[in-house]
Length: 277
Image (cartoon, rainbow, N blue to C red; front, side, top):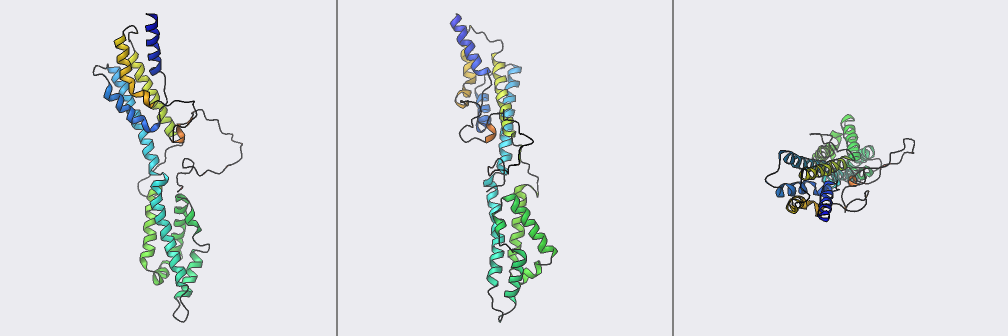
């Protein structure tokens, strides 16, 4: 009997302790737990399971918000902006070769090119956010300095129209135009995943409440209800990142930053800079 009770206690402890899960599995696990839940759950157990589902959805909401500003989502609008400015610069450069005896087009193109692109189009190598800012300045200069009419006179108007449209689309993509897009806080995914893990443990404790450790059928029922957890539980020491998951799924006990430490520029990691290519 003692061995049976000890084995039952080990099973209960295995599931009621807080486990770690990959953020990509949270909503999936929540629905698996819902699918295998017994029909005779108590009101408290149903409430605990409902919280697991809510917390799983919360994790997906954070991931969804991140994907809106992830590098792949910004690649197309950024490339469209790059193409627009490169095309305009290329056309002006080509027109500078028009001989003076043919007309003043070559001279005018050279002047506009020097005014707008004195350093070429190096700014098109910037990340999406910086490219939007540089494009805004350039478009405002074209408007304020009365260069639009001069450009349309020697370059087809569709070239500038393409630049303006690309600017609008890039602004919407980076969240500064149209419906606001807010990037979640750096540790939002870790926090959402942690809340999910706590909800799963709370659900397990609700199932374990008043369970008879001497009843093998009750222990088997408890284990079967929580079996979906087993293949999705993250193993390994705290602080490791599970197979490609977001960096925010690492150890929550990160060291406190030293306010007197020298400034270090942000890295090219998407978590530090969501606008990189």
